[in-house]
Length: 353
Ligand SMILES: Nc1ncnc2c1ncn2[C@@H]1O[C@H](COP(=O)(O)OP(=O)(O)OP(=O)(O)O)[C@@H](O)[C@H]1O
Ligand SMILES: [Mg+2]
Image (cartoon, rainbow, N blue to C red; front, side):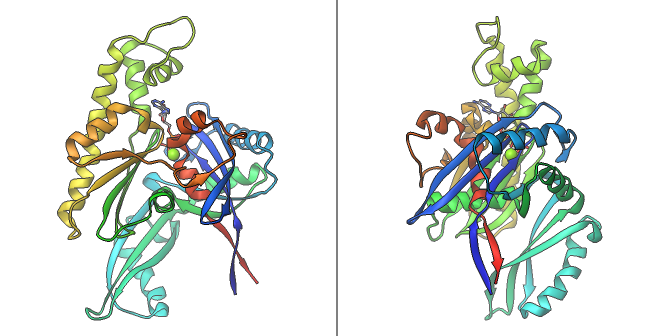
């Protein structure tokens, strides 16, 4: 028998920082026990590959030590070019048949060598009248999973689940907002290097895409145009300054606006693709999260193109916490960067008995 065990520690290893969250179930909702963020030096992770093992291991060890987390079992996630998610419409078949068929389907639909990927699938819906079923097929490159698993083991942690960013956000949305019938929403996580899109109708993922673009593009453009350091450009982007410079140069707003607009354009192309290829109808609302969601111009730019409301996703909407342990304002400021990590912390250890 398979028993649902305790919650795993959510560990989100992003390009710009490592995030850690621990929750516990409390009544109908969740209680936040631990939350921490540790910045990574630039280039620690490139294209989903861990380039600087030492930096990531140090960040993990520091977080677990400072947060005083003794539990070692963690949930990780991957995103970007190493993950392919496809929705397949197949003839209705039994579970054992699907198990065999899926390998063949994967060979048709996955542009990687099948021996190099981990496959997973999930039956989304069955329609006996039409003799059909919808199946979600997920393929993730083994070497990138291995990369993450290794670095986490080096920090003496036990990775028990490897999730996908797009699904982690979906879980966070479900927890905080629930679903209503006929609802079609787009969940966007805009991080440093990757933008994840997940379009969800009636609680089921219909379309996912990861775009290799995010907040780093803005920082790099500020660096290039104003001839400043990475740290200065990061500070300017967030509306602040560092060191002796006391004002944000007035060019910054325009540079941010331009990069953000091209990112919003890329996002819109994906939304258009979904609308053109799906019979589900139009996206009614967009929820935005990830560190780059902090940039007000991004939200405005997406809204202008998509012509539907864009709202900041609040990952802690239905998560309670002790006011003496967490500063409300600080938690609110960190919330966009915490969404995926919270999604991972919702995952449980499955125990066989
Ligand atoms: N207040 C802010 N204003 C503007 N940008 C911000 C702010 N806070 C964070 N960011 C940007 O958000 C990005 C980091 O977001 P996030 O933590 O979601 O990404 P990540 O998980 O490290 O990266 P990825 O998921 O792309 O690998 C960085 O580009 C950072 O500069
Ligand atoms: Mg991220």
